[in-house]
Structures are given as structure tokens and as C-alpha cells.
Amino acid sequence: MPALLDRVTSVVSNTAQLRRGLALLEAGDRASGFRLVARAARSGNPEAQYEIGRLYLQGNVVPPSRRDAAMWLERAANAGKVEAQSMLAAMYLHGAPEGQGAAAAPARPAAGLFGGSEAAAPDFAAALRWSRQAATNGSADGQALLGYVLTSGPEAMRDLAQAEEWYRRSAAGGCPQGALGLGLALLRHTDDPTMQPRAAEQIAAAATAGLPTAIYLLGVMTERGVGIKPDVAAAASLYRSAAEKGVRSGQARWGLALMEGRGVPADTVEGESWLRRAATAGDPEAAALVGDIYARGGDLPPNYAEAAIWFQRAADQGHSAAARAMGLLYLTGAGVARDPEEAARWFRRSAEAGNAASQADLANLILAGAASEEDPIKARQWFEQAAGSGDLVAAFNFGVCLAEGVGVERDDRRAALWLRRAAEGVVNAQYWYGRMLIEGRGLEPDPAEGRAWIGRAAEAGMMEAKVALAEMMVNGRGGPRDHAAAMALFEVAADQGHVGAMFAMGALKGGGHDVPQDRPVAQRWFRMAAERGHPHAQMMLGRYLARGLAGEQNHAEARQWLERARAGGLEEAALDLARLPQEPGEEPFQPHEQRAAD
Image: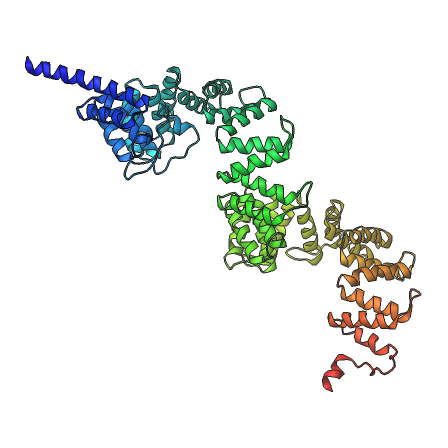
């Protein structure tokens, strides 16, 4: 009897100490309060053990210690304290308790998992054990945690059907995390359209309870009309709420809504601020968007140097489009020093992440000789694989690899087959296939058919095809001569900056063709091409000026252009130089080979 009385007295005493200690903590007397609660915990009171574990986890009364928190929570959990079981499960999902470190305890054990925080080195085995105990004992939080483990744990641990059932029980128990988990589980039933409204209902319940991730997801569903009527204004409002609660994806979406005026009055300054906040918090999409803002410019000119900073931030986090943007900046020298090899490195990173545009960019650099030894093989493999699955752009690129021997032995016959397949939908392939027919590469020569394919590419607006078709019209290859139509094509290409077309315009207007001769116009076209480095145009401009063919004679300028043509590799310009009258005191001009002999 005395022993029983002692035990009863002890329990009463522990409970009293616990109540008194909690009251002191509430009143702000941390030292005295913690001492009394700890005394009750050491005496075996599970409630006190749970409170001590929670205090160590929070770290706002005593220095934070995950190890001490786990020790006291396990004692309480083994004594049947359900809340301790749930908190242990959440704790293990955020990493094993070895070592010291601050980790704020969530208001509910599952909140950290469903609120946008990231777990580090989780111990799924321990989390499964404790969440199952809590779930079996009726904890709605524990049920949500068990659903999470069965959904996101190691493959051998996963059981989506069980997870959905535990989420269902948790949601029925009023747990917001359970409602969110159930909503996400229902969305996986893509074969049943009735599941989407039910999913939206559960996620809306979690959002109403203030769960940040649920608010963001409800915004996405509202914007896209998934299980709920689409409403961009309502979606923007949800994104704003999620952004203000620290969800970085919500910050990115809210910033983009402000930038584009999507469901809210446009405010580019505020929008950029939110995008920056999301990017700084580690959202790669937001960083890429900020980079794009600076690259595009707006009220102010583009700032490519600033764009490069944000594109690199996004690319370093695996954003393939941002990696391609970095490649383009290095290729053009915008905001960074021009460096084709560095461009190839960024294109390679983007291409290896599956970005098809970067694969094509890298292939172009390979053809230009600015790539590593392994790149041609990789590029050919990418294109061959994608071409086999029906991608016409990849079929074109694979055909070019075969035609040029990039990453594979040159094979004109196979190249022609792939280019023919791609020509059904790719303009560049129409041009290439036309050239293969004209040159008889990989198939019987057929200039008429080749001209027809090049004509299709020209009609689609391809500048090189326009020039090639015009040349065929001039010489009558693959069809009738038509100098007037050729000149029209050349003029369009010349106006778009094609130097060869500028020279062709000068040649046509210079006489001897089925178009009216106009030598002043011819000289003007020759000058335009000459100023852009075209050696033949430089030689023709020199001849026109030397002989006054367009009415203007200028031996000094003629000499300058003829010298530039000869320096560009046209030795025949030396004969024109020799015929020029000598200026007073000038030595007679001698051809290059005679000078060398002297």
C-alpha cells in the first residue's frame, strides 16, 4: 500500500510540475519553467518528455538539438504519446537527428513537408515506422505523413493505393496536409475525369486552411481550369497569397502575372521584384525569366551582361533553355566575351538535358569546327534517335550529319533518304535535298526536280534558296532561263543583306542579260557588295571606276578596290591594276609574281 501511494503521489507530483513548468514558460520564465518540465520528463511523464523534445526541436527556450529532441520524443512515443510519434516521423523525414542544428518545429508535424520546405537526407525507414504507429493510433497528422512516405519514399517502400487511403483518413480527420495529399493522389487518376473536381475540392480545403503549397497549386489549377472553372484573376490572387507566404514558385507566377498583366493590372517594376525574389530563393524558371527580361529590353535598351548573370544562375540549377541562352550570348558576344568554345560548352549542357534547339545549335558549331571531339558523335546520336521517332527537324539534322560526315562516316545515299523525309515539313531540308538532286549526291542527278525543291524553300522565304533558284534561272539549269524573275529574287535577298545577291544584281544590271542595262545602278550594287568584302564585287567596282563605265572615272579609288580584290585572292585584278595610268612619280605596277621574282 505505501508503494502504491508513492507511485500515485509521484504521478500527481509529475503532472503538477509539468503544469507549473508550462505556466512559467508561458509567462516568460524560461529557465524555471524548463527546469520543472525537465524534472517531470526525467521522472517518466510522457507528456513532459514530449514537451521537452519539442522545446529542443524549436530551440527558442534551450539551444536547439535534434539529437536531444529525438531522444525525448522517442521516450514519449514509446510510452504511447501519439503527437510524439507524428513529430518523430516528420523529424526523420527532414533528416536523421545525428549532430546539432537549428530546426524549427512546425505547428503540425506534417506542415514542413507540405509547406514548400525541402527535406535533407531523410531517414525514410524511421519515418515509416513512426508515422505508421501514429497513423494506426488515429493521428490525422501521422496518417498524412504515412501517405507521404508511401508516395515519395524509396521505390521499394511505395504503395500509392495505401497512400491514397491514409490521405483519405487524414483529410476526414480535418488535417490540411491530408487533404492536399489526397488531392494530389486523385489527380494521378488521369483516366477518370471525375477525379479532377474532387481533387480540386480537397486542394481548395487545404488552401482554405492556409497551407501555402495548396494555395499555389490551387492557383495553377484555377489558371488552367483543372477540375475548376478557369479564372486568371482568381489564379493571380492565389499566386499572390502563395508568394506572400514564401512559396518561391508562387512568387515566380505572381511576378509573371504582374509582368504580363495576366488577371491583374500590369506592373513591370513590381513584377520584376517578385521574379527576382523567387530567383534569389532558388527558382530556376524565375531566374531564366529575369534573364529574358534583361535580354529583351523594354523602356531601356537590353542589358546582356545582367541577362548573363541570371541565365547562368538558372542554367546552374539545370534549366536547359537558360543554358542555351548562355550559349547564344557567348556565340554572339552579347554581354560576355565572344567565345565559340564556351558557347559549345553551354549548348552541350543544354543538349544533354534534352533541349532539341541546343542540339541543333551544337551541330552547327560542330560543322563550323568549334566543338570537342566527342560532340559530333553525341549530336549524330541525338538526331538519329529523334529522327527515328518521327521528328522531322531531327531527320534534317541527321541527314546533314550523314552528308557532311559529322559523327559518322559520310553516306550520301542515306543522307538523301533522310533529307527527303524531312523535306516534307522542314524548309532547310527542301533546300538541301534540292542541292543533293542537282549535284547527284546519293541519287541520280535530276536538276529539274532539284530546282523544284529549292523553289519550295524559296517560296517559304529561305534566303539561300532564293539566291540558288535565281542562279538556276540565270543559267537555265533545271528549267528555262528567266532573268527578270531571277533579278526579282536577287533583289529581295540583296535587300535582306545577302552579299552574293548584291553582286548578282550588279552583274545583271551591267548588261548582257535579258533585263534592261543600267550601269549606274550596277555600280551601286557592286559598291554595296564590295564594302561588305566581296572580292569579285571589289574587282568589278574597280573596273567601273577605272573605265568610267557608269559615267564616273576615278583612278585613285579604282586602284584601292582592285588592290583589295587582289588581296582577297583574285589575281586577275592584277591585270586591271597594270592597265591603270600611273600617277606622277609612281613606279609602274607589276603583277604579284613579277614582284616576287624581283
